Length: 202
Image (cartoon, rainbow, N blue to C red; front, side, top):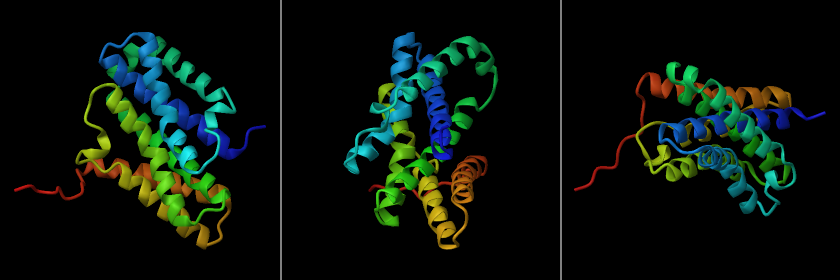
């Protein structure tokens, strides 16, 4: 039976893959191109994390992540017209993937024995780097570099994870609270147009 963290990882993979495939479809990519963008979105951040942590990239030991991305492609192909009419579909799926992958990144780094400050950085990379790769693939300015709160939501989630751990809460509760905090920060930031100050040039 898959563990709770693995279930989170599968759902996050599916959500992130859908967000990438949806944007690829808006750019009129073919099915293979859309799948590549979906896979890059889903596994990009985790791959960078694993390389930095000096472990085998997670998708190379289990094909389920590539299968999840393929199912996301089938889902978008089957229900693409309905998705177009659903406002903020991309945003919701992207936020879900961001939250779940942040938790997975923090948890895996801690299991490998790294300190929490490293875990927060790895959680942020896991959550946000896939979106950067996605945006580069579709020739857009990466969302992380725009005014919206994106990577900072991952940082907040990592800090919440750390605080909950200090309170010695159950691991599943810690993961749920941390993931929800990322999702909530992202939702509130967009809803109320909260953003970081811009660096002004001359």
